[in-house]
Length: 264
Image (tube, rainbow, N blue to C red; front, side, top):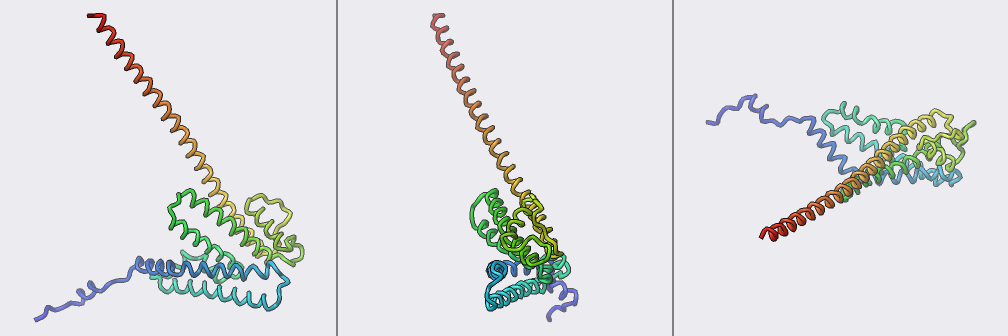
């Protein structure tokens, strides 16, 4: 007769989904969607930039760019919803991905999706055997270029043709983004619209963070060079001491040999 199986045994044998399992599913989703979303971000960049760089573009071009921007937004929305559905603890997922949610819900933050391009640099660095400092330099340079590009496009879109605004074209936008990111702040150009000020805050915060990374990397490099120089000097001094000790031993041996011969 087969042994009886209690309900407790059934519960013990039943696999229980855990938060770690949900996190693993989210990580697998993100790993598979990473490169496609990088491609979508590049397409978004082109479609987003054309009407801003050329405000006199033909209506058909502007319409196509608008549709492309909408489709790329839909792709990122699908990605967010998909990750949310596979997550075990969905409230925790929402709390940990507030920026992604804001980018999907708030149109003014959609240019931040261009930061997906940093993912490509991350993949390349992981595949290479480069040193950590070199990877940090690549991240900082790429982040700086993307921040200036994104800030210039977004501020130009928000401020152009607005009464009282000094930012009238993409060239002004690039100048403002560069000055703001480096925290120089000449004051010759500044946003006057609420969305422009939100963009300015993002560029300021991002610029401070990138300058901190650059400064820390430079300081680390200088410390390493000082340590290498000190080590070279220490090695040279130690070699000189050892050579001098060898000469002293040789002189002692020679003197001992001469004294032995005199004793005979």
